[in-house]
Amino acid sequence: MTNFLAQCRDAIGAQHVLTEDADIVGYVRDWRGRFSGKALAVVKPGNTEEVATVVRICRNFRIPIVPQGGNTGLVLGSVPDESGTAIVLSLTRLAAIRTIDLLNNTITVEAGCILSHIQQAAFQANRLFPLSLASEDSCTIGGNLSTNAGGTAVLRYGNARELCLGLEVVTAEGEIWNGLRALRKDNTGYDLRDLFIGAEGTLGIITAAVLKLFPQPAAQVTAFAAMQTHHDALEFLKLMQSQCGTLLTGFEFMSDDCLQLVTHHFPSSRSPFSRPYPHYVLIDISDNESTDHANSLLEKAFSKAMQQNIIQDAVIAQSHAQSQGLWFLREQISAAQAIEGKNIKHDIAVPISAIGDFVRITASLLQASFPHSRLIVFGHLGDGNLHFNVSPPKNISDEEFIAHQLEINRIVHDSVHNFGGTISAEHGLGALKNHEIIRYKSAVEIKMMQMVKHSFDPFDLMNPGKGISLQH
Image 1: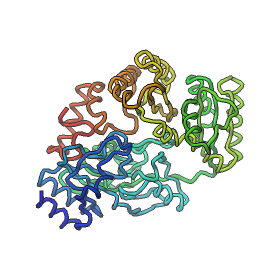
Image 2: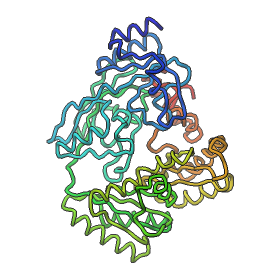
Image 3: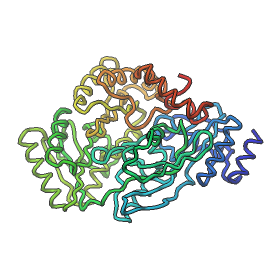
Image 4: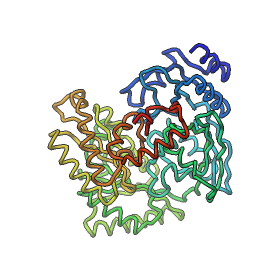
């Protein structure tokens, strides 16, 4: 390996090839701190050409590559395994915003750009880049694209795939594909862009992207509503869509258990209501007219919802600070869970119309097998994506409960499958779910995916063991 590392150092500079344990520990440990792998080295190229050179060197020596952005993933997709045979290829030095085209409403950025930096660059140009995640101050756009991230504005703007027009990619052979086309229409063959988006770095390495921008809304208004049941939340979604149309940007669901967790572990936060309700929805309206117009729409919709007994109470933020306070209640659920202790996370999606029945039936199945386990259910109700997390009963240690993770996963995932859903809505498969997915996809679908993988990466060097693996 000495010759391999020497070639990497010659290619990108010795200071960008890390081999000491103290230097690489943050690159081999997952975001939740539950797994630590090993790496032959962490290699940090500074531009696309250097990425291509490193890939060619790895190909010559048959060294596996784990591409990594902000390392904020939750399914072990961006960390190496424990063999120590792979390198981590960090893209954080590829952080340039290359161009902004205001007339075409596009921004071209490198893969290592932090998501919030792209949002800020768009805002400074009087534009909006709407992809928004809880980890947006740490995650990078390359990772967002490689997992086809969703976030809180999918209802109006779509997920990462729908926000991307073109890509620059280093292939498994170390060639550079310049697909940075800023076109809305291009019917000239297979859509290679869509193969790389959501592929978790298993087909090639995204180094840059052309992203869609949108006009900055004249007003953004946030509201919080309370209701009794999941079915009420779905009826409320239908009513809000009929009243607000495409102005409805976010529709985030949470149970009262979620709200209680946040207000308990973050004492500076508080519920907007004087009494608890079983369920809540956080709403965002993006209006091209004015705040007054948005408030009027919300007030009319809330009046109808209350008349029909769909919601029991509602508040509309009257300032930016109040809006931030309401969003804080949603965005800190995961952090509050982490403080509370270990839990078993599920990033699932079912058809929106089935959400109420899915939650009711799956909760019953879990209680039958694991009495008094606690459900923390929240997520993007408007696109069917729920974070269906299971916490241990009060009288059981975290370790004892986590020992049942495979059993709990099977109950939840089988129920998801029975409702026509997916076991990974926006986090990807990584190494955590790449074997589990075999249970739920047909042999034909797995075969087609493996054929694509083999065509692009016959030596299985690109993030091996993640996503749909050749070893399945």
